Image 1 (cartoon, rainbow, N blue to C red):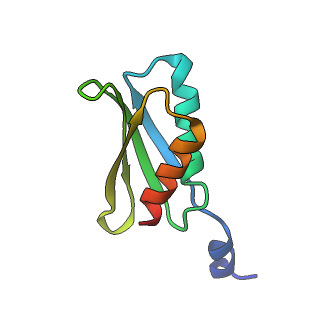
Image 2: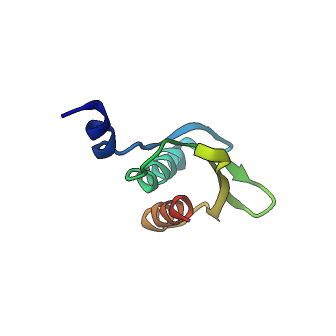
Image 3: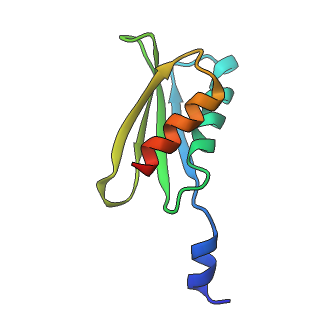
Length: 93
């Protein structure tokens, strides 16, 4: 199996580089949900998570190949599955 074949089979995850303004008790759950949303991405993506004090929630900046840049927002107490699905939908758009 050549290098190209291996590259086609291996998913490139979304990597969270930073998480600001979110308590430690919620941070792990939110980071895991965001990373799970990019688990099956065909190309590498990066995420930066921050509390959104103006809306009382969380905002995730997702960047990726070819100038991809999107923001996902959700409530601080949003269900993990909902966060994962919203991140996945954003990457697939």
